[in-house]
Image (cartoon, rainbow, N blue to C red; front, side):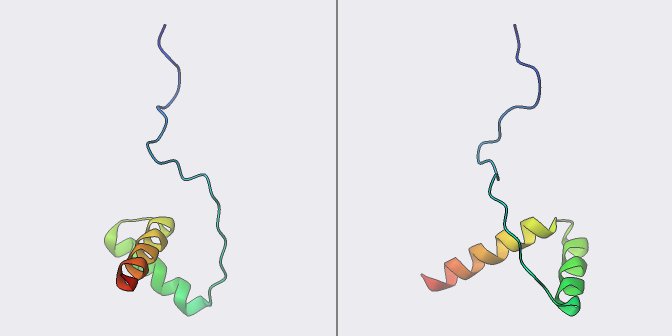
Length: 56
């Protein structure tokens, strides 16, 4: 019998994180996400990875 539902993600994103942004920064983030066709969460993850790579 096959399983019902979506397959489990390889790297599930089950940790929630909340930040506060000023209106100008949020507007820039939304514009960036629209231009690159990504979600706000993905943009933040990419930004964190960029920062971590610079530290090496």
